[in-house]
Image (tube, rainbow, N blue to C red; front, top):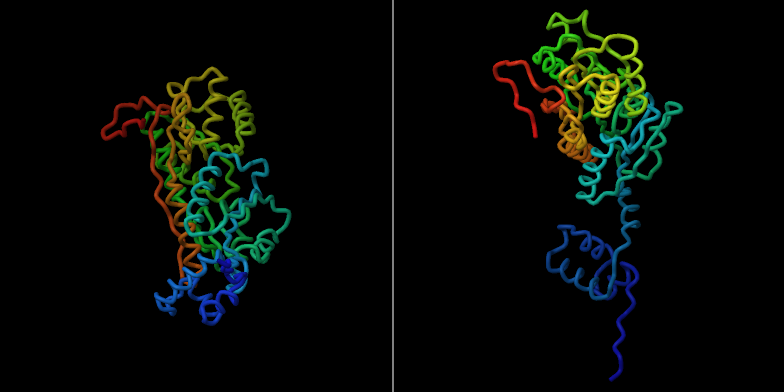
Length: 352
């Protein structure tokens, strides 16, 4: 018996010829367009499968003006030594990658040390991505506002501030700073220190919350701030120098869990015990926070929900919707670095 040779299907036009329909009908059917009847869609999909035909996704994206990729950008204007291996970045990037993959989009990652004010323009105008998620405002608020005024699919993880133009998702950082300071005051600590660089808006807000709690507690004269960087070694070195110069505070609020871990290390090297001599509170609740010695009391940001909101708002903006910034409420997680507490009614129990 002679072998029956199937026609070669290398394009939509070839498949359309075999099916006896127009190429536009094939294109719509394979993309699931509801204008094509279900029977016709099923027949064309079956024919494509039988002939091993796969539509050229790149060509389809070009026709639609899409790249199926989202840029995730980390601008490090004020912390040039910070790396992607930072626990906060690793956690946030993991959640973002999962959320984008579920929508069928690729993640294009960039760590940017701004040299001028055009770094974000280069990304949004590259034609390589359909939208941009910026993780952290750094000292780039003016750039973010300027680009957001002309480019809608731009969402930023950071501190929602009055008057800003860019769309933003973040936790209530001022409330987080207040909560951390109040917790230490409730444990009987009176000489408090805030460690963190306020050049970043998020950290500036945490610092303001700390200072507000100190004023409310009548402790303003006994509270100090130190612009500690976010990288572990640099933070440790600065905190160690501070401990050499003057008596240690009895309570520390750190702008990140990495700074808090560095503080615990420096305090231990100075012969001080955490928590009996000094209580320490971090910020973020990264996975390592519960594994320190002692386990770290911290302010938890819901990064999973935050990443989900960033992606949701971005795609709503891509669809032409009017969207607004979102603020998440931070949560105090009490662990061993501030325990035991002075007896007080309604005190929280330590987390496992």
